[in-house]
Image (cartoon, rainbow, N blue to C red; front, side):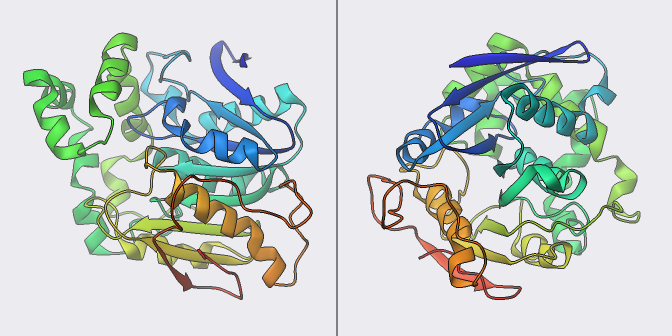
Length: 312
């Protein structure tokens, strides 16, 4: 069911599917909420209420003209407004790419609203640029500061975008960007939040995340390395774990939805093996895993902070 909420004149459109423990799925660049289409049925089948917004600038949501309208604190406020609109006090939060950055900020700034946190691909803002390797991998973030980026990405039927992004749903994503005029708003996330001096300046000074946290990265991701995720352990005071997914993607467009859904499930279940409170989300007396219509996740568990079980 599609709903919308007005946040200071910006309309955020989101979908709600299923009943049960709420889980908020946050997409990133260059996607919309549609990228979670593989995960939603599995989570609903496990007894969750799944909330999937189009973040501001994307899809059906408003697209403010001002660059500063895409600052992470404002986008975090959008997420809180969605939970308020639904009367949800706390939710599991899963984010990919910019959605992962947003999830970290929510866990840091509004900890009372985040039950469990799963970050796909992107590590904590306070540790992201800790290594030279990650700064080098993030060259495109500097390039996106310039207006020429729109032309570079879209020229010649988006040939450079297709080659650089290697997105599994490139045609659909491009059609959505063209239909809704979302390319400049999408790039404004980089322009508002990753100024050039952030590559060499001090990291953001944010409170640490207390929620049980799972970070998942891909061994084949050309833009995001292992260190920026593993170093995120120092930003988490609660139970945490990281997991490497073999191959290129950990995102919401993965087919079948195993890498993300399976690892999210494992993160939430980890409280059982760690002796913490039992997660009450799924139905079934035995706490059955959600059906993912495929084999087990291709994940390698890597513990980085007290005992928490990663992928099976």
